[in-house]
Length: 314
Image (cartoon, rainbow, N blue to C red; front, side, top):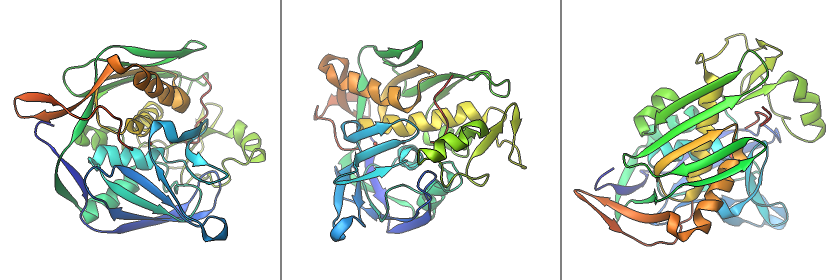
């Protein structure tokens, strides 16, 4: 982290699939971008041939129930960005233009791994500008109905402690702590898939959600059983996927975080809310450049940066 530089992709790349909620086919084209550009989406395929540029940041989120949506329906939006954003964050990609020709990022296999594979195949290039970090200076917390998400000061990078609780014995109460690095994300989180409950499918589809969900992209739970014939990829795949989602959600800060994120049954909405609470208190954070042997202040303005089918119910 010390003395690190911003990065972008070495060359153009693309990936195609279908949205888990819309079931619409979509292609993403990843374009290298200059330093300090951040992660931005170019939404194409709008009415009358319009296009819209949407910065992926916390204040661009317009919905965060079953997925995270940036932009708005009237002028153009992009939904279900969390797995892609987690892959970008974990790969250390600071600057990218993501061209998308539909309303929803493709679900692929329900994890971040297919996106990371694309980035690995293309490779990254370092840029001259120094990477900036968001350093948490004091605790910030949001709570609702016994659930919470919070950011705390932490001197040794980005630590995550996430806990979930579901009534089914298959999941129950699970807790995991991870010091997040590109290596730990790849080893611990990248393959964890989104999950959902069979009992909720009819209700979700009547509401226009989960139209593209299948056993190819979602861990399906029926009572206390897994419907997928291959079973789980990790014994605790559920908590790992919630952590993956949180990485994508917290990338909406626009900078890699230096702090400790903790949550209990938090979900997308509370993860975004804790970022709003952090940026609402100018004394709770600073933007720094990590250099060898020193930390120097940089621009204090948040830079552009930005969510799965699993229900948020406990």
